[in-house]
Length: 232
Image (cartoon, rainbow, N blue to C red; front, side):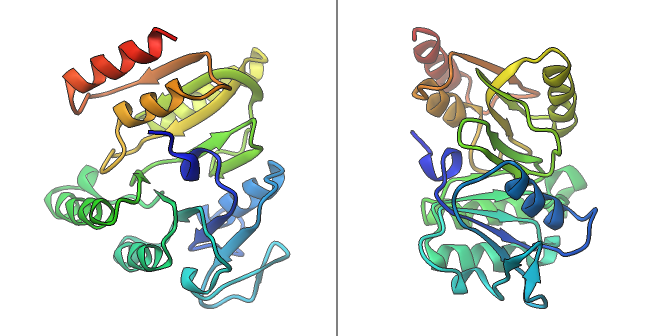
């Protein structure tokens, strides 16, 4: 599994983009611009015309095609509608930042299962929900709300903890430690550690994969996949 649309997207839509500093939807747009992402960035917000100098689209379906990656930051009640629009747009991959799912209780868990069903039914890989986002230093892409951009290197980090993402970035900056990718998995409703390690094992810019895991979805698949990656 290569996951090109997630790891090396050519274009990114930020659904729930905001003009208000401090909001996640503003931070992600700002971080994409600050990191030097070379492809088009499409802010999506039905009530704005411009955000950080970029033209804003009312709906992801209005964005120029193709949209490789959609980053969803809308409130919980609007996520399924945003994902349905992504499906109709045929985006390549989705990162759902929004929280309030299984970590919030039974009702959130049910909503998370429905979200997973939607993306799996249409074979769209999804990171999250309840995650920080994703960074690819070699692609100059910070599609996250973490403000610090690490040096480019050959260590990929996969973390189930969003708080640990910030700590890793602090340590990496202090020690001038180079990272290739940093991926916040969140609740792992769709993509899990196994699919991400498989993709990173095929990544020419990665020589080391470090993972912080609080649980493992499928032990047998994880061991097989990690063994193949470690053999390289």
